[in-house]
Length: 326
Image 1 (cartoon, helix red, strand yellow):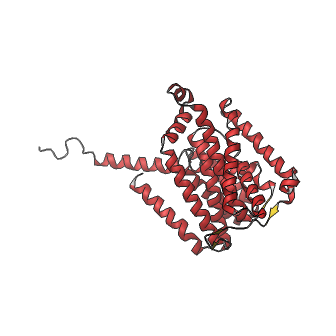
Image 2 (tube, helix red, strand yellow; image 1 turned 90 degrees about the horizontal axis):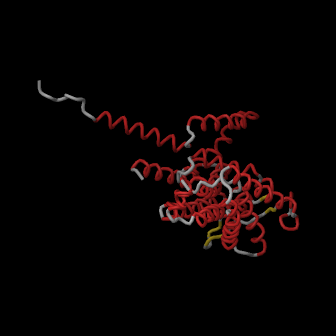
């Protein structure tokens, strides 16, 4: 990471820590939503941006994680036990969902994951004996950590931010390990990766499983954040929104989901002053953004930084004959 990149990360981290002290309750709720959804977007970025596997199922895994916590905590199960259970359950389901990726690719795989999201939505809506159907589940309690109660919005935000930091660091470490290089090789050219002896089958399944588990852990935080969950919250629109976060921020860029989630959470709120036109303006802004920076916002920043460095390098090259005696 360059010095400028390190400075940007430190500045962003400082802003994330200081923000709740200057915001009203609804503002704290919004940045808590950002922290929760960023966790899911990091998982999707691993599956899509690094392993190159198109998935429209991440919203479904958020829902599975949310319902896991909402169903287990009223039974007396400690929150963090339910939290881990949500991650493990989504890991197992994601591993199974990865099998179609061994046979189909690109838009065919997108249709498979689309069907899975629809299936999960129908189960959440129709199986009232388990999920309470369209009436949803209310009152998911917020946890107490070593005597620290997170009932307040600010306290729960710092819990979400802490978990996001831990999971992000673990993902960053993994992407710089041989696993991360294997994922990139799988994205760039699966046939070449296979010819080099890479077990593409195992790494494809791992990309789905780990990405899905991060979605489940995000949902495990979402349930106590909103304290009311119902099937429509995890419909296909959530999967599209998470996909938008990854693409807008920069697919395959580690910090892309952080930026993309910030845009997806805050931009619609800022545009609400236009009343009935805010969704139209939001869609238009995303279309323009994708037209001019298909590599995402961070890709645009990197391109501008490269152009600036090239200009500086050219400026330091002496003109031929400059300084020579006559």
